[in-house]
Image (tube, rainbow, N blue to C red; front, side):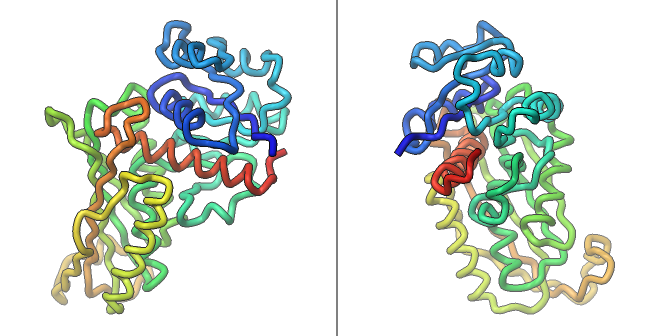
Length: 311
């Protein structure tokens, strides 16, 4: 079976890690081009050494490449602002786009939760690293019981946050919060990101809080465990740090300000603690925040290739 040709836009940390994952791990995808705007970037240099066609002229250079017509899927690992321009430039050519920025032009996709619903979308958004790590847990709780409110805290090593991540902090929190609701099923979502300056750097750690009413706690734990295993199938370093915790809320707990209008009573706080260790394909293992994004994007592209739905 012929492999699906793909291109990566963005020769920074995320794009370079994605490139290496495609080359090392994917029997379904063929990397046809690595695209950047900095001729001196390490990503473009590595791509050239690995025999991948490169251009430092951005999307314009990609469109001008000899094999452009054969490329079916384009990953965008640039920034939210750049993705808007890149998507507009590629729209006339009918390419499928997998957006690793917080631009969110297309539907949010978290592979373990809703990939099958969006296989026909021309542009899918991978939310954020915090979203990919935590939304599966919110979704796992919400498939057992209603979740009027969910809050996530994503803590990543400061060293693993490059210029693109830092420039998109506002978009990170907004996009993640919106996806907690749209994909995770929470009535209201909130996201917080922490750039941890600890040395040596710590791996990505995430905390998920869900407010719920009375529910079968064993069913919630089992649902979360199943979801963690599903994510771990494509992100091997993803794991639950300890058993899911349940805290009874007193009747006078001041949580009403967190809940959306019309929410039912909440009696319990569910808390899950996660960590994500990177595979160290390009960056150190502490950069699990980048690894979960590239691993999730790779899973989406491979599913598109398997389905033969790519045009």
